Length: 484
Image (cartoon, rainbow, N blue to C red; front, side, top):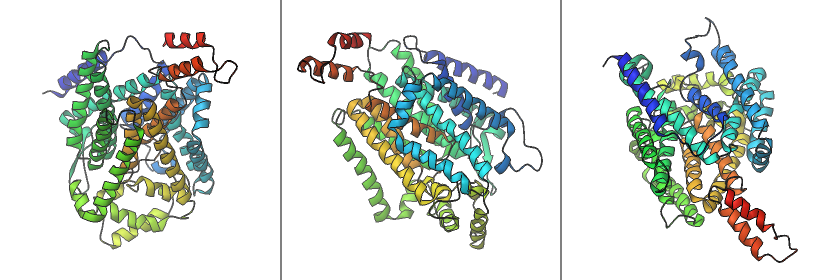
């Protein structure tokens, strides 16, 4: 097929997916397009690439970056702040309730002071605040659950069909070759790992949306929504197979299994059983690793015993951290002199894998250790543990919402074992923040889609003794329920 004709068909298909998945009854804010635009860019390639603007000769991209990309992220930052100022009460409540995230980000800011390039580190921290702001825009929307569905769908409708188009008809864009001649599938991204994480995020949401639609038999226009989400999931599964990203595929199966399992009546609303399920999954993973050995686990994932060179990279990088306690500074390890020692060690061992060329540790926890030291590892662990507890509590209150946030959180934590999932400007990090904020909003009552919490308060007020602290104006509560 002619590439121009294929491009036209793809554009019509994308428009058709947006048309099928349109929603007339619930309107989300226009500000939701900001996180969609943000994820389109960080989930594909830099804006400067799409505009065909290349850095000037001799430019150190690691230190200086692209002025076009910097201007783009600055514009998004200003626009996001403008949106959130109008929602300052919700934003304040969410931030206050998520102290571990604030402490972690504050430590990242402080760590810029001991970076070899504090100005670069500070600029990167400012740019990284976009991750936080975009997650807040979604969760503080007037209809946050619908906003999450629409955001991930909008990202998928654009990136997934376009990836297939690039792979099939624009090989110079959709495929890449490693230094040893191996072909990899990249789609709209610049490497298969980025493509894999986008597919993970979109496919999990598509499974959740399909399950929700199948259970909501009275929802208006249910059939066309099912078609749109089914097509999106088909794209996701096809591309996961083509990308051969073992980590993303394993995390998708984990998250999908959690969503399907927690939707069963034996788990629904029973947070204790869900905790046992999650604990069992972790225990099985650990026992499998120690009892069958690293080689067998790697082979099951389609990897060699070194996890495509990752174990060699980890062993070489860890001893080179400038300060084990506090690290090299926020996003500063790879712009310091420390990596040169690791490259020298690997070359002495005769190891030179193409993935080493990518400036990351291929492990989120080690990446945090290199940049922020043991303090950073401890803080990110607290963020994950507190987020998990919130997700479990959210599942106890609203299983339909809690199942997705729990699946995203477990998938993010697992993904970071073999990929740097806690880096700024990474889709999986944005989704992790969004999941934690969503769970918090459910637990604190900011999200009450079914009216269960309001009805519970109404019931307590009805039987509360006169003059007690539980007594509420019943007429006002009846109005709240009616308005929902």
